[in-house]
Length: 188
Image (tube, rainbow, N blue to C red; front, side, top):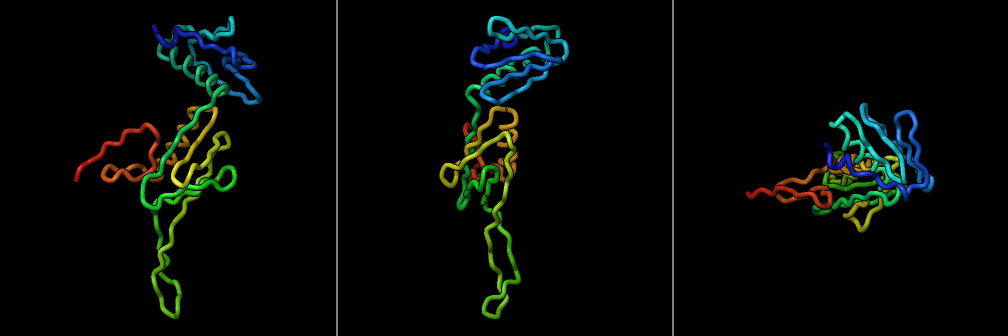
């Protein structure tokens, strides 16, 4: 028996809840989140609470957690803080959905004409990252990115995609680091 699955989900803070075609649809302040029920589970709505029961014990707690995350996302929202650690690492938001990242990558233009001579010129390479429509972002300073969304899974997926651009390395700890993440450091 699942200890998590037994707990009811309080939906008193959500404006509208509907259960149709094996899908729970939650609506609050114009935002809508839907959660698919997995086979073998039974969802009952009574007394401003959602109860998940069923014979599929492998997915029982998972369905309950997905519904609970949808309620929390609609009422409070989720946020992730990413910190850029490294010399010259910067981030800035351009518009609503574009994140410009300068993460220490460089490119060289070898044929730059300057005073009649061919020289190498180093230019800082700035990556452009497009956020999903469901995820909003803002930069606090030049090295902190705050992402927020009502969908926890999508938010963490976006954060992982940004971290994947420049993951933290174990020697100096440079890279994009998620708040609360533990990085195993190596000694030289």
